[in-house]
Length: 317
Image (tube, rainbow, N blue to C red):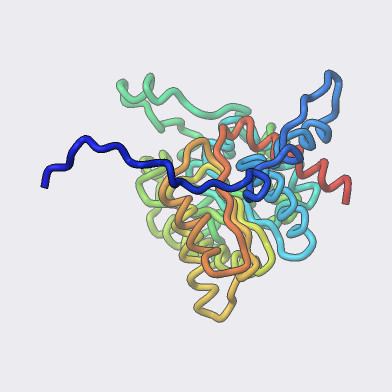
């Protein structure tokens, strides 16, 4: 059947008064201009109570509450370390906003180099061609040594590396997340995929030590996740490894009868990706009283903003 050119008759369309409509936003939710010389608290208060800004406020409230009743577990990817954010996370550790830390292998490498040399993040484009990528001698030799020695004593990778740093007293320990975690007795777990990190390219790399250490850390991590019945998990900058590990940890905790019904999850990254969105934000909180949040933005802007908001909110409670 071929339809004709026939305009739809709008004469009978039904309308209703605007005042009767339920609206998602009203002027009480609007942003307010920030005055010159204002405080961080006034800036945060001036944010609109809409979409991501409202989510940020909800995340801040959840983390502040979880510090007292459920714990806050942070998943930290490498980009967070190499953008210079460790001092802010260390400050949050000292304020009690960090119950445990989970990282991937690359984050440990960057933090280890910071502790030893005060610098990290090589120029991959410049070093790959000449065959020098990943070949910093101290990074490969010392990290593999730390993991092997710790593994021989039954330690996970996180315990092995933090213990090694403690014994060698690195000159830039004050800027190291790992050193701070060790000083504050905050557990660190490290989750690696063999072949993904530069230290796996070195002759000293031991598959047995890496595998056993990472498996032990996975089981420690499950124990940490199992404590988050009323807690918060924040995934910052890990697109694959930590979201996958977190989902398996949630599955194991629930297999043992722990519902994690009040869990709050947060993914904070500069782009929204499949695994963090599904494995951190959506699946673990589906069908529960918990809530998942996805906040998109550059780490070097959003993590300082989150940290400042936590400090300000904590000062009011």
